[in-house]
Every structure is written in C-alpha cells, then in structure tokens.
Length: 584
Image 1 (cartoon, one colour):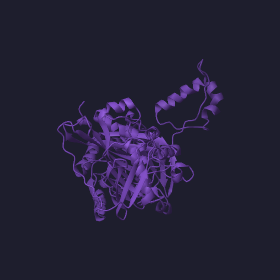
Image 2 (cartoon, one colour):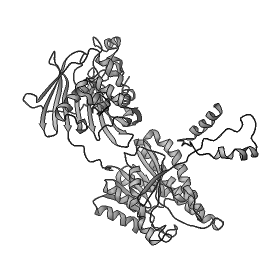
Image 3 (cartoon, one colour):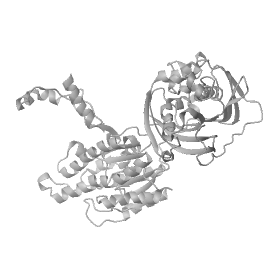
Image 4 (cartoon, helix red, strand yellow):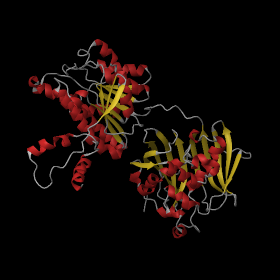
C-alpha cells in the first residue's frame, strides 16, 4: 500500500492521556532504574526521567504509521528529537497535537522516512515538550519523493568523558511495553521472525531511556528538569540481555554528544546523539508567530488587548469602525490607525481594519485583512460593542436590533470565516465578550443583556464543534472602564477599573497554554472568578402519571435545590442525567 500523500500537513489529534506517579515509576523501572536512582522509582520526592515524555505519547505516535499507510511489518524508529519546554509533572494529563511533516524517499528497496512532529501540553496549561519523530519504513521506498537532507553530528577525536555500562534484562521489553508501546515486534517471536529478526528486539525507545538516565546522571545529576533537548538516530537493533555502553562527550557548556554501542560487538545501536541542558527558561506566555484579530480595538479594552498581544510577539489586526458609542455616525479610521501606530512604535506588527462587524461582508473582510497581511489567523477576540440603554417598554426595535447586530451578529460574522481557517490548521483561540448584565441582569439593558447572554450560548456549541481541531472557545465578562461606561460610573471607581486589570485573563485564554474551553470568567479591578451554568440534582415526581401543578408546588424546594449541582459540557450529558434519575 502506497504512502498517503494527502495526509501530509493535516492535523492529528488532539489526543489526551491521564497519567500518575505509578506510570512515572513503571517507566523508570522499564528503562533500568532501581534503588541506585530512588528518586525515579519511589513516590517520595519523585522525579521524572525526561525521556518519559515520548513513551507517554506513544499511542499518539502510532497515528503517524496509521495516517501515512506505511507497511507496519517494515517499520523501525529512525530518529527522535525531544525539545523540553518545562519540567514534566509527576501526574496530570497530556494533550498532544501534531501532523505528518515530511516523507523522504531512500529509493526502491531502500525504504522511506516518515517524519511526524507534535507538541504536548500538560493539564496545567504549560507546554511541556515538542517531539520530532522519524519512522524508517523499510518497505515503502521508491515512490519518487525527495531525498532526506543530510545531517552531521561531529564527535570529538578523544576518549569519551563518561562511559556508562548497563545490561538490560533478557525480559526488559516485556516490562518496558507496559508503558504503552505494545508493538508486537518486541514481544511476539512469530511477528519478529516475519520482520526478519531471530527473536523480539529491544524497543529503541527503551535503550533511549537508558541513555537519558546516563546523560542526566553524569551531566545534570539529580536535576532532570534541566534537560533542554535530546536528539538521536537509531542505527542498529539490539536484542534484550545484551550489555550496552553509553558514551558521552561534553563539547561545550550545556552541550554534549553521545552514542550507545553494543558492548559485545562494538556496533553502534544509537548514533548521532545530541544533548543540551541548562537552567529552566523563564516561563513567559508568548504569541510569536501568532496572528490575532481584535474587534473594537480602537480604544478601551480592545486597544489594551492589541498592545499587550503585540508586546508578546503577536501580529495584530486592529479592527474598529470608529463610530459613536451608540453605533451611530459614519465611522472614522483614526482610532484603529492610532493603535496600529502605537504597536509599530513598540516594534510590533499590526494592520488596521475599519470594517463594520455587524455586516456579514464586513466580518469576512476583517478576516481577509489578516490573511492578506499575515497569511493566517490564530486568535479572535470578539470585543466590539455599542450601548443603547432604555427601559423595556421604551426599547424600540431599532435599538434592540442595533445592539444585537454588533455584539451577537458581529461575533458570528467575524468568527465564522476565522473558524474555517483554524479548523484547517488544527489550532485556534476564540474569546467572546459577555457581561454581568447578561449573566445576572441590569435595569434598562434588555437588548444588551440578551446579546451578551446569547454569546454564552454561541460559545457553548462552538466549543463542541472546535474540540477535535484544538480550537478553544471561552468567554470573558469584563468589569472595565471604557467609553461605554465613563459617564455612568463615579469618577473614583472609573479610575480603579482600568482595562489593564482585565487583559491578563483574556491574554491567557488566547494562549497556547490555555487548557480550558467553554468557560466564563469575570475579571476586573484585579479580581477574577469563574461563572458557570450549574444544574441542580432535581427530583422525579412521577414516572407513571402526569404530575399536576399542585405536585410542582409541593415539590418546589426539591426541584429548586442546587446542593450537589453540576455543570454539563453538552446537551446530551444533561439529557443522560435525566434518564439516570429515572433508572435510580
């Protein structure tokens, strides 16, 4: 079966996996750790061997073989690069997304190389590691693709600084495979024979784990969190029970080269090893390479969002019609232009958009501006809004519709074309803007409250549709000084409600590190909390006859009880809860 060329570049995942301290210890035992390295094998003061990273996402890695359509009987692990961004916690959940990056042709009967790249985040929101993995597909060459670029690693012409000798057990693959790599080549003698081996072989990543222990133990003893990068090429298979030697040369401060040899034959089993180590870099949230679209960004909150994103490396589309607070007037280019000038003065990149988001074509044009200027869109902050406050009986249709058109329809008009781009690339962050008026109500704002609560419903479904494409959709409820509120708040309170207090929460929701989707957050004056739609446990009045209004009256305390209430991610979960109540 030929390699699937259409699979190149298409997003894979996200795939999530929960893990705990037992998984960390099982892996350590699987790569030869024991009483001499108790911090890897005992939950007290437990530390994580950095190479646990690739073993923990091996189920995701298998997707490369499945999606590329390689002949599974002819595959071997070719190369592995790991880039460590943050220390790996001893428990939590990994979420991994990636893609097939390249196919390289070694020629007819010489095999092919399949390269996959992925990024893994922890459930705490931190980016943990990047994996670049190469599969050597021995039976898939000759398809006419490009040759692989040459890679050279220079080894010093001297004896190694460290030589670490180990002897994996004859049954080592049977223990290691419990960490997730269940490929039968390492356990099934019949499968191994069909693949051309006299018996099951060591997992390349098991030997890789032995090497990682040796590198950490000699270069950063007791500080595995200081591992920054590890690369190698798997050159020859190794049978279990055969002694190995890990040879390590320090080349400069924070860098070393290494290889693993078969101690019986002298053959190199892992070659071209590179290892980088040092202090953990400052964990800053950055947006380098990301493109953000912000509506209503000519002043107030939108302006602060634009400036802060640009300071952290994002390229920004500053959208603002430049109209009056109530949406009247012909608009002006000055507000958007002014913010673009501020960003450029800080050394950032930005372009202006003067389109009206209340118009469907205007929303399309905002996203087109991002695509024309920067080639993509990664972030959308739906911030544009107007106010036309009146008590309900004085709320004419014109004022009702004008507010819904900007807040609700405007978010739809911009988000829809942006969502298409995000879905194709397998990544996106969308922030809606609700309000306490929508969540809790406010006199004289039926139009505004309705629009703001509708945005929560918009988010609730979009979070479901975006889940498999790594598109996270959240909502901010800001309490901030703006031109919409400057004449309805006491001056002293207005000064305390700077937009800069809201921006940190919004920026986090726009970041790669954001682990949540479908959440609502109040933010203002330095105070933050989460709002949620919570459903009480309720009660079954009768499943055999229709209840009466009197039954409702008599059971209202039970119906209204919120103790033990819960959130639901989607409609089906809530309906399932109702059926469960009857089954009880």
